[in-house]
Length: 216
Image 1: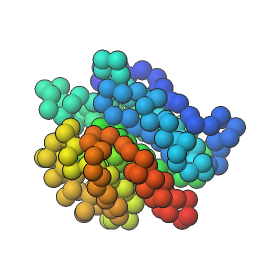
Image 2: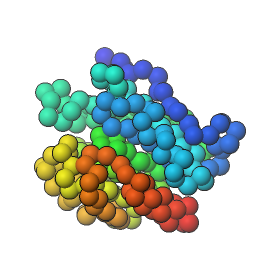
Image 3: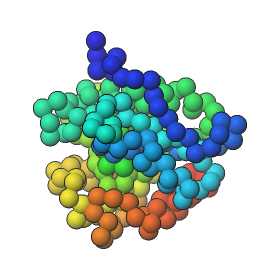
Image 4: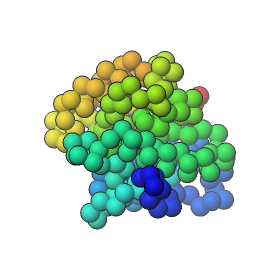
């Protein structure tokens, strides 16, 4: 039995009732470590109403919340665990994406690792990616990460505080190298935000989504 076999059925919260979602661009929210699907859904009220927003719960119970995969510094961590989580999200996405003209991903912290992993596995499937106070997974030479197909055309917003106490310098260094090489990068630094999201950043994300997804 693989790790993915033990995962529960996906739990997804939507910003709109089903009859109001069809035909709208889809924005998928991926929460951080130890949080849940309710954590980011409040962002939907502050982002363009043109999107149907879906917030997905990670599959691994972790304390009072959930995790996509074990923490990268733990003995349980592996790239295979990351791939099991991404397969979980992609399987769910495949059941809903036909209802939407495009799919955009927004991930916070570990959720950014998930969002960028999904992009790396299906480089042609996503209109844009938003990463907040997060990182990109070092996949080494795993063939399921199709980085060579990402030629700098997919727009990616990366917002963070340089004083973020959670995301370690080695993750930032790897992420910096990866985003510069593979995506059309919008990078914004914030002060006093720490490991969080502030109103200024949400405003910038809203502008990014309008410019890079809705106005294309």
